[in-house]
Amino acid sequence: MSAALDPVDWLLFSLSRAFRSPLAVFVQIQGCVICLTLAIGWAFAAYVRNREINRMKDAMKCGNSFAFLCHDINELEHSNQVNLPRVTVVMPLKGFGEHNLHNWKSQITSLYGGPLEFLFVVESTEDPAYHAVSRLIRDFKGASFECLLCGFTSCLPDFIACFSAQDDVDAKIILAGLSTTCSQKIHNQLVGVERMHKDTKYVLFLDDDVMLHPGSIGALTAEMEKNPEIFIQTGYPLDLPSGSLGSYCIYEYHMPCSMGFATGGKTFFLWGGCMMMHADDFRRDNYGVVSGLRDGGYSDDMTLAAIAGAHKRLITSPPVAVFPHPLASDLSFSRYWNYLRKQTFVLESYISRVNWLMNRGLFSFHCYLSWGFVAPYFMAAVHIAAALQIYIKGYSYEETTCTTSGLLLASCLAICTLTELLSMWNLTRIEVQLCNMLSPEAPKLSLDYYNWSLIFVALLVDNFLYPISAFRSHFSQSINWSGIRYHLKNGKINKIERNRGRGPKFTDLGGKHLYGKKGAPPKASFLSSLARSLCQWHQPKKYEV
Image 1 (cartoon, rainbow, N blue to C red):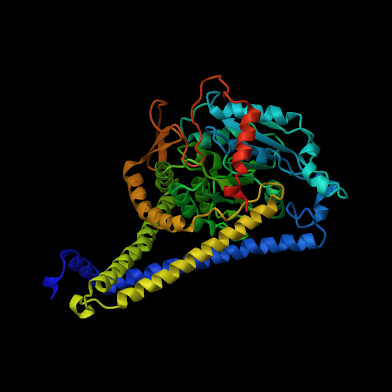
Image 2: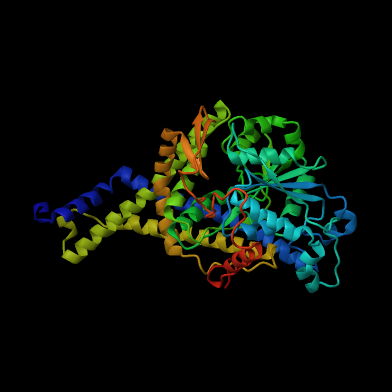
């Protein structure tokens, strides 16, 4: 009978039969289990985030109109504010992009009530970020917090709170020079902590693509004060895709990791975009934090997470530590690929034998699950294509030796996929709502512009490419990060190459210009750049209902 079949149909039916073998059935059931596991994890994360939303709503019902800053309005009394510890915010910068001005503004206009200083650390004056930050600081140097708070005080004239003992923004630019023994980001961070105020109690490392809420610094500091055993406090970004497949792939890549940060407390995960630590840990090099980062360190978060694990130190992530992360409007697929390469490359760096074993385990586990997630969809597509051919060409199931069991497996996978996407949508919806409540004066975020068809495609693309990227990183032992090529040996950086004539001119996520002319400010004025940035941020099709 099979001899009468079209060769393509015969191959299709043969594959469908092969995909009903015990091993293939196991792979397809495993794919369903992976989908349901992700759905359950996101449901738990949504529960933690939603619990915080309900707490804020309850506080507002009880008359606390400043619930986005703290649950107990009495904490805003002057007697409490004057005793808050000093915090230094260190921001290692590289390049300048479309969302940077808005992000920097959200950081320096924090409503933290204690002494606060901001250190913008750049490699040199040739960095395009240097002149943009210089103008931003000059613009805000004379701006009092009374003016910055006018939006809140006009809405709540009966309540007066002291948010800062200082009238001016305490911000500085530091030129760090070139790194020689570690990544440029880590070098900038270490130079920043060397220059922080002598009375600083906590240091907060922020990436320039982090958009803070008004109460973020206060919330992180409050948790550190409550529990001195905390080694690091962290948070996680809520990606705002720009519409390209690459941006959705990045959103999808971050979503499984997000459940590890939505614990409402202890976690084993660490995101380098937001890390608050004890300043004395750097002054005294406790647990080898300085030497571990300085001597060949490539990834700040992976290195510090390894140190925390080795010394059994506590990492926590408060439920309010979720930050809007707008992705570049022109984020291409090639830039997504380079970002994925950087993410897989961090598993090649390590500080100890135990850390190496853990990274090898993560490498193997992630690669197995990624292709274990994608393979069932290929099998389901074959089952569906075979059934369609039987229906269209009028074959009988006996003639093709196919059965309906393949369609049953495909149907189960479809149900599990819909459950997974629904859970992902629900978590994103709740995080969008939480961000809107934490930043009541900011333009409202919305789910309306999320393309869920592209998100499904991104699920398949990202998980298919992850093992390829991981193996390439393993065998190359080098990576280009923001125009600098790093080479690893025995888990540490042993060679750094800088060549402005080669490599990318833009960063991956923010689309930032990496190079500028020495001593030359940008052509556009600061105010026009800020206005353009805010206009882009306020696009209704992206951020508003």
